[in-house]
Amino acid sequence: MHKFLPYAWFKGSCVPFEDARVSIATHALHYGTSAFGGMRAVPDPQDKTSILLFRVDRHVKRLCQSAQLLLTDLPEGNVHRALKEILKVNKPENPIYLRPLIYTSDLGIAPRLHDIETDFFIYGLELGDYLSPDGVSCRISSWTRQEDRSLPLRGKIGGAYITSSLAKTEAVKSGFDEALLLNTRGKVCEASGMNLFIVRDGVLITPGVEQDILEGITRASVMEIANKIGIKVIERPVDKTELFIADEVFLTGTAAKITPVRQLESSLLSKDRPIMDALRDRLTLITEGRDETFAHWVTKIKIT
Image (tube, rainbow, N blue to C red; front, side, top):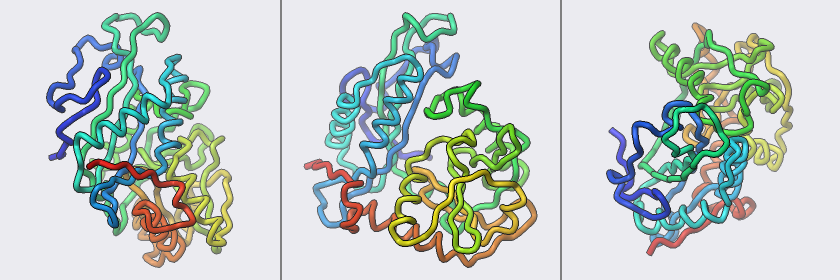
């Protein structure tokens, strides 16, 4: 059971979570005409009166850019103000995940993005580990990642996640934790909701943005941390067979953080993951506000 925060941001103010409701005729519900984000926030270990938001500027910018792809204007300042309000009114005492969403709130039946009403909300829930920190088992999905020419994959568009949903359920029902999708060119793309990294001969490798991946914020953070600590990073296409012979394989995402892949199809992968461990330890320090080098990635919000 999810433990939702008591209050949500809905129609311009904080309301009880159970009162934040939309009509069954809502356009976005029928056509997937929405864009969303996901943000992690943790209580400040050194200041009980504050909450720490990780890379909130990047998250808000991506959300507003996703809205642009839906021909909708969502000012970044409006999102920042709403985030502060929802945190202050809820005063969370545990790590949380925030879900902002911009959607077509119109009640019309025509599939369109012009001359249509939109709205914006945020809700949150307590969230620890989305995936097991000890590692997940993955299968190669029979479903193919969409192309950017068919969907605006630079944004987190709601309708695009039907493929992720099909891939995730296929994986779980066939005995695995997670799915890895190939793109239309047969290259490894990403997981159902996470980016992918492999390590070969001490080099960190990840599919580039031209491989129809989501431009993940945790992904970008991991690459920057790696560069900072002297790990070479390469963005390039990744073949399926490389996964089986890689020294390390792991996934990254806001919810998943950094999660190792322990099994791929019927193959058990190495438990020795020195590069991933170094990156995960450093990311934990950063998100908890205990790393001066990356202090600019963390925004402190006073809640009392």
